[in-house]
Amino acid sequence: MNVSSSAMLGIGTLAPYSSAKAALLGLTAEAAIEGKAHNILVNAIFPAGYSRLAAKSQEDQRVWMERYFQPELVARPVAFFVSREMNASGDIYGVGAGRVSRLGMFNNEGYFDRELNAETVGEQLDKIRDLAGAEHVGSSADENFRYTRWVPWTGGRSGTF
Image (cartoon, rainbow, N blue to C red; front, side, top):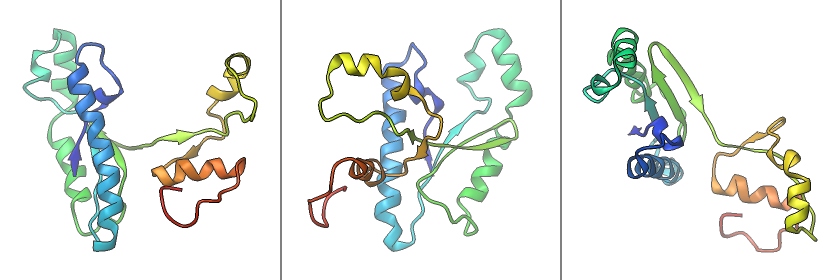
């Protein structure tokens, strides 16, 4: 179980911390792929619990965190995630205040044009950004395979494609 943070999405004040927590998601994904053959499961959490760091927050946030985000409400889901009953790997879970959720990376259909240029990107930006109908991307191979919808794969059996 890797402990990342929603800070990897950006806080606005802690670039080194956010970057390090983002790196843990890459490590989690790679370890899940490499561990699969050995029945090793690896996941990550974005914990939201009252801590010494939260105690240094602005007063209204500190009171809210102290009241609703007891550390045991992070520990209980983690106890399951590291148990023998857990059978998922490579996932990211948000845990805190009694809530448990799965976070994911998604990719939409996007826009394809072999004559693509900067102006076309600008014209198609709404379509490019639209996540309606987006699909979960669980690995580099998942992401790279999507290109074969438009470009025939000719690379054999190796690589991330």
